[in-house]
Amino acid sequence: MGNEAAVKKAPAKEKATAETPEVQATPVAEVAKVIPSVPLELNATMSQGRLKLAEAMCNHYRAAWAMGTTKELIEHEPYWVHTGHLLAQGDIVDGLLDDASKYFRCIVLASGHQFAQLKVIEEISLEVAPPKTPATMYYSKHRGLHLKWCAFRSSDDTVMKSGFESQKQANVWIENQELAMKR
Image 1 (tube, helix red, strand yellow):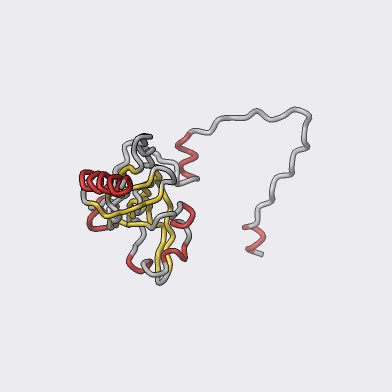
Image 2 (cartoon, rainbow, N blue to C red; image 1 turned 45 degrees about the horizontal axis):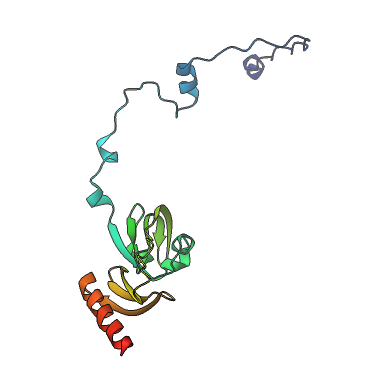
């Protein structure tokens, strides 16, 4: 019988009227009590446990991607099957394609044994039209850290020779090649 006293009867529902109830604004402080994600004060501070040196928390990797690598391939998990174990969440991976035509900067979202999830956060096309002059059969162009300076045939843009340390060396080869072709 003691349980009967603890039970409170719910008030009877009022019949709906044709009038719509008036909407009242709720103060932010009351909403913050119900929803903890709304801050009570704008002068909240960052705790020391949440702020660390980037050098201690994440690594910055430099990649040399093969020519033809695309954003979709970089973001494809199986692409990282051999290197995923080296990466950790929050790491940054950036680099150029072998021909220096594109630059990618990525952030590691997740990684583990034989996989990694990366998101490309920056993609820059660095392709510059080669300077072509009709008087020469060849031209030189820098194609990245691996191929270095290359000599191209003007008619079909085929790489004739690569690996020159400087543009001057490539141009000397071009001059010698043009002299040889005139004989």
